[in-house]
Each structure stands twice: as structure tokens, then as C-alpha cells.
Image (tube, rainbow, N blue to C red):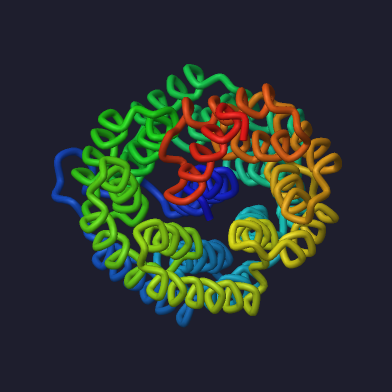
Length: 430
């Protein structure tokens, strides 16, 4: 998946996985404030220790519903940090043992969001709020689900309620993304700075620095992005998202060998679909087509593995298929996702899949829906420009492509090159 489009479909889920677990796992740990960085392997080991301790406790106290809920949340987090979706089934089993409690409902909602079952996540969040009306975490799960379902007003209300109840890192992070979706980049940056100010652990600091880095990278501020990624790594060394951020910057600065090596190490440790796609695209952009093909094969296998564990993602699959020229597969996947939810993310995927099938008049209608909130997204602008060009609306196509490259000239190793070529072609009248 392309750099900025990957962020489009994943950022709210990253907030959910990274911060919902922190909220559920108790007080801030002792590493905050000048402690040494925690490598990702050490983080995984720490998570495994937490799971082992909870399992031992539950062996002695099998009726401890709060510990069952915490064990479920820990399994969801392990799925994130290890890229192993088999933990989802373990999370579900633990959360079912937590009984009919508000904490169990929050955990089930977080799990449903991670599996991209956003309707179920919304329902679980509603149940959690009924049981725990003062739980900011429950409103966070609701905000994530409603954002992905395309209920913008409902998501805004949930974020505001979360801020009212607990103005912490998780709340400000969600507010930041809401501002970003509406084209208010300054508001998004300010909210994320407030999230950073509220951060109490290395994990929260690293997350905030990553999001600030993404905001900078997505608006052509490479040095600022690199600074945030580096500061995040100082808080929690070898963090996956921050490592990916630095790899993007390295590639954008023209050091392809170093960026490729960074990605090679990253996917060997965390074969997440978005990282595999970015690595494959970078390989392809540098003429290493056979190696890129192997990574695409790994990506397909990882997607099948995720789906086998109930974590379907037709949206990501549609975008990958469209970018690889498989229009029929792209449209099939995009339509499947659109039948479940009508967010701006899925509207963009529909527009791109329809374009790949030569149905550009319909594609433009979905592009209009994708851009309805005002998000300044380079990938969306690129897709729109290519659709307009296919419709012969040359001036508008040029404007959209210029906007894409002005927003983020490095939004994708491959598609940014295509945007530049199409723009030159249109300007040349060919």
C-alpha cells in the first residue's frame, strides 16, 4: 500500500492497538523520563512476561474477570507487535472468559477494530458505554469504529466525549486525526503536540513522535519528519513504526540502498502488509523486479493469514490489486468493502478501482465522496488527477496532480513517479 494511503486506512487502528492497551494495562511504567530505549524484541519479551503473569494469576483465580480482560487486551497488543494474527483467537477466548463486563466489552471492541469488523466494534463500544458511562477508553473504541464506518458526526461526538472525560494522549491523538481528516493540518499538529505533552510512557512518546513525523512527511517537510522519528526512537529504540518512518525519509532523500536495507530488516521482524507493500514498491521503483515480486508474494500470503484469523481487509487488498493493474480483483474487493462501510477511505478505493476498469465517470463520483471532508491527502489527489485526465478534463487533472506532488512529492515510490510523468504529458499536450 502506498505510504500515505497506508496511513489513511491504518492510523486510527494504530491508535486503538497502541493506546487502548496502554489504557487497559494500568499505571505508567517506571521507564518514563530518561530511561533507556526499549528495543522491539525487548517489548515483545515484556508482553510475553505480562501474559505469563496473567496466566499464572488466572490459574489460581479463574474467576478474576478483570485479569481475563487484561489478558485479552495483551493478546491484541501482541498481535500488533509481532504481526501474528493467531493472537486474535486467543484474545477472543480470554475476553469471553471476562464475562459480561464493561472492560470485556472494551476489549472485544478493540479486537473487532483490529480485525476491521467495525460494525461489531461500534456495537461493543455502545455496550461498554452503557456499563461504564465514564470510560474514555470505551468512547475511544467508538470513535475509531465510527471513523472507519464513515459516521463523521458520530465520531466527532465520541472524540469530544473522550476529551471531556480524560484529556490524555489517546484522546488528543484521536482529535488530531479528526482535524487532519477535515483538512485542518495546523489543528492536527497542535492536538498531537498536546498528546505528546500528556504522554507518560516511552510507548506513548514514541507513538506521538511517529504521528507528528507522519504529519510532517505527508506535507513535504522531510527534515522535520526525520527529527520526530529520531526523537521517538530515543524514547523507544527500534520501534517498528518509527523505523518505517525513517526508512521513508531515507528513500525520499535518495539513499535507496540504505532505505531498502531498513525495510528488509523491518519486514523480517514485522511482516505487516503495509510494510511489505512499501518494501515491494521501493524494490520495484529501483529496478529490482524479481525481488519485488517475492515481496508481493509474501504480502499475498500474509493477507491470507490475516483473513484466516478473521481480520479481513478488502480495502487494503483492493488498493494493492489496483496499483498492480488487476482491475477486476481491485473492484471486487472495493465493492465488498463498500457494501460494509462508506467512509472516505473506501470511497477513494472505489474511485481507483473503477478507474482501473475504465469506468471513469463513476470513478469521479466516488472521488468526490472521498474528498468531501477536505482531507489534504496526496494519494487522493493523485487518484483524482488520473481519473480527470482519463475523462479529458486536462486543466483539472493538472491541478489535482500538482496538488498531490505539492502536498507530498514522496507519497509513493512508484505512484509519485507516475504522477510526475502524467503531469508532464498533460502539460506537453500529448
